[in-house]
Length: 162
Ligand SMILES: Nc1ncnc2c1ncn2[C@@H]1O[C@H](COP(=O)(O)OP(=O)(O)O)[C@@H](O)[C@H]1O
Ligand SMILES: O=C(O)C1=C[C@@H](OP(=O)(O)O)[C@@H](O)[C@H](O)C1
Ligand SMILES: [Mg+2]
Image (cartoon, rainbow, N blue to C red; front, side):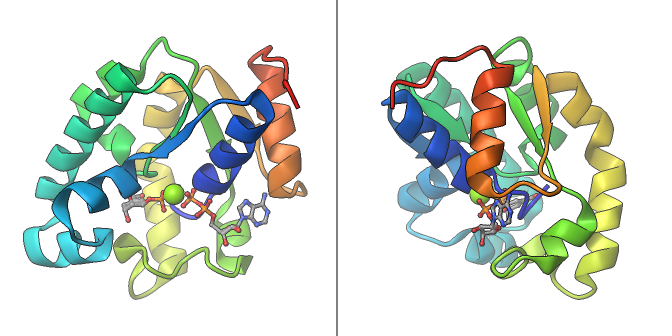
């Protein structure tokens, strides 16, 4: 889900493991010179998913650390194929948690308008996809980002280096 904490938690996990961190949204922005919001507004979601699929493919081939994806990457069947079987963490935040977070909604084009309604809709559409690709699911409820990162590492049986 957008705003669930993937980028924040992924960065913390990478720090604990002593490995690099990448985020496909940042890769797409660097590669196009445009923000995610601009890409959605100018080229549409379909084009964004193509760029995202390529970004996931490239990052999985090049990068050996932790990779954060956008919450909608899983809607693309080819992207799901790239992820399935890997050590994928579903950072599982509820609609109310995301809405209550400062920085949970801003800059996320798919949440424009009635963010609560959009989040409920996206959650319903995507739940089966998250189940399909995730090796572990970490509910964020009642946990700060640091706690989510620790639970994720433990769930994947990864031993933090620091
Ligand atoms: N477990 C958490 N509890 C409260 N706030 C969080 C938590 N994880 C992340 N956040 C905050 O929520 C916002 C969205 O986090 P972000 O990592 O950008 O999410 P995503 O990458 O999933 O869209 C940020 O302001 C971040 O600091
Ligand atoms: O859920 C989505 O469809 C999206 C989530 C965003 O990433 P975050 O999940 O990191 O916010 C970003 O890729 C884009 O705004 C679309
Ligand atoms: Mg993110």
